[in-house]
Length: 117
Image (tube, rainbow, N blue to C red; front, side, top):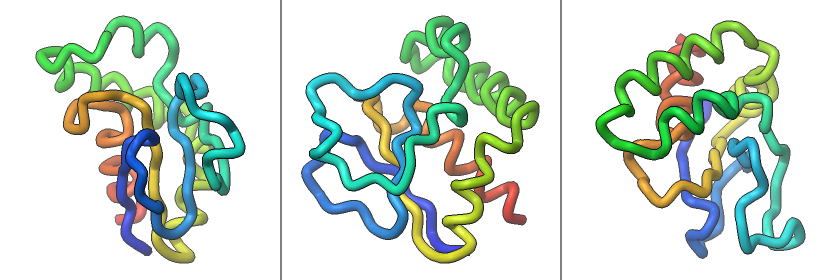
């Protein structure tokens, strides 16, 4: 399995390997032509209800991570393209959140690594 990295969509560096946007909504101020994506894994993003409950509040992150992992476990098909890409080489997960430590891409990256075993 290749390395799985995460990166803010607004960082102006070139992501490595296969690149997937992992937000449910398209990031504000970013044109589709600005991103070189291998896929938009919108179904792998947290549900709207969970995202709104979390509200990017760091104190809610541990509970958010638990709930989000439960959602991912209920829909394994949503992460299949990400796992397939990781089996072939490096993968970068792009996200829009300002907080680089408390966001869904952190949880998703760890979940993918756990799935690969």
